[in-house]
Length: 253
Image (tube, rainbow, N blue to C red; front, side):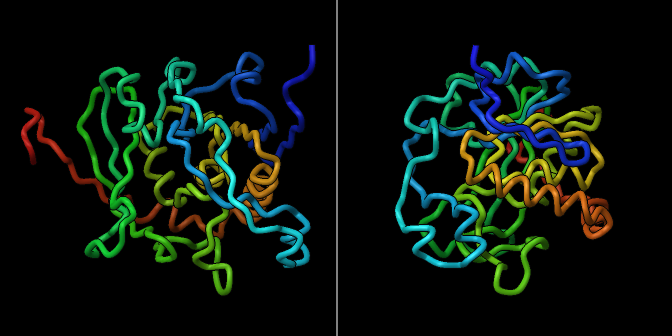
């Protein structure tokens, strides 16, 4: 039988695997929770990741400008393999009919600003617990982003993945899983969940099928491990603001 793990990289307490997460799933060891932003099944197309040659030389010819789909986004997403663990799944409004009763986590991407473009003002995640629905506000629309402390100067405002989530958002998500010491992200993308785990001292298993994004995730997580004190203040202070969307009786707050 062919090994589904095409490449494995260990960085600190992070185990990063290149391959198809559904094929690798039976080979995983201990996992306490899943936090991930999977393909939603909506057939979206985005620019391809920049290979190492582009990041090294900066030449547009090495990258090539074309758009391609997110792997697996052309089929309906099945969340059931990941629901065996405590989990937080982003984009869940696109496959809500396949979910059980749980809580909704709402990311207000406008922060305190008014809407100004045609992009969605919020993104939704689902957690498989019965608890109040909660909102997190952080400006992250187009090139306008708050809390992006990794990329400064010319790199500020540049996404590493078309559906990249900000690290403060993933820190907020991990706050809902306080007893989970090993976090799995089966659709790792550019590795944001892994960076958040490093900052909080948790173990991380990340799986990514696209080699370009896998390389980006390895780079980001290696930098986070190498500079553990750089972001410690942001990781601990202040606590992300939470506002209930609904009261304990289910009425609007």
